[in-house]
Image 1: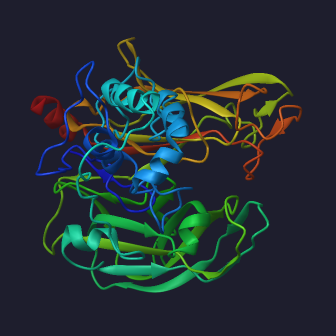
Image 2: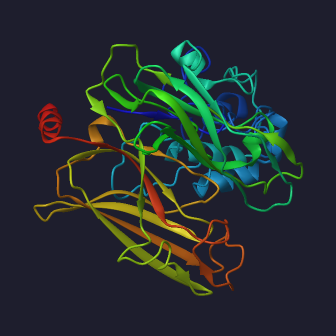
Length: 438
């Protein structure tokens, strides 16, 4: 079972099947051959970069034309060699290495770009292959994929985003008509407004609660810079109850990269349902928040106290009272966050690293989606150990001030420590079934 995610502007992050120039990607040039923009570099940029680095998107420059790419050639080389671009922060030496949405460059692609820059960034003969076809701004990404508009759309109330460079939050509750019969969610999309909202919405959540129910909130959608939708596979779904409902929004605006206010900003969530009469065999909980702070009965974030010019490590443990399938993980820290990992301590005493982010960047909120065959299948009684590392020194290039004490808080200059884990809780029969299938 798998889910798929896309990045902030709607590009599906799984790009392995993208075909360019007559249906084939250009092969890496052999040693000694000339490396050119048209023949070698453009295909890499088309596949990995230009969905964000193009006019109308949020990246700082467009790489769709040769002149601009040459102007920024030195920056491109440095960023790809440091593996800061494309954004993919998984430790390549430990934990699961098979991901559906891995957009990182191969060593060969990085070497090709470096050779091109070192040679003076030559253009080369002819024209580059045609760039990808981009969606129309503001359109639902999944409408083309699923060949229909959302079955249910919910909207936040408007918020005036101030161009003051400060964190801002908006948490309205909106009443919706809901649905007449319970339905299984097949997919959701979290859509900031275009073009202003996509530049200032950093992350957000939408929670659904029927007014006549038991008060339980269902997390129907999550968003971060690096993730905007999810598609559940055919045999997985999230059950949405019938009846009038209230949607509670938790939106974090971060207008750090714009000098323009965004008045009356509205965020939308679209839901697509499995066909009527279809009951998936697995009910997913979606992304579940596992705290790394607030352990031992202390208040939330009570163990986050980072002295100036220092490092801090905290850990949190959670024991599963049911078997579970881990499908994805998404760390959440702020600007001092540097590393976060998830380990499994099995009932038989084994210990296994499941995943580790070794170069966390707060400006990206990426969900790391594990390939189906590599998704950890955990028995009841497994303990999940989460470890967070904070770097409050000058060596952390996104640290706003290493001379400050840092405590828990909602602002980017404060800190948090939790991980969103894509998880499906199972009954023992389902666990044994999936175990046998493997």
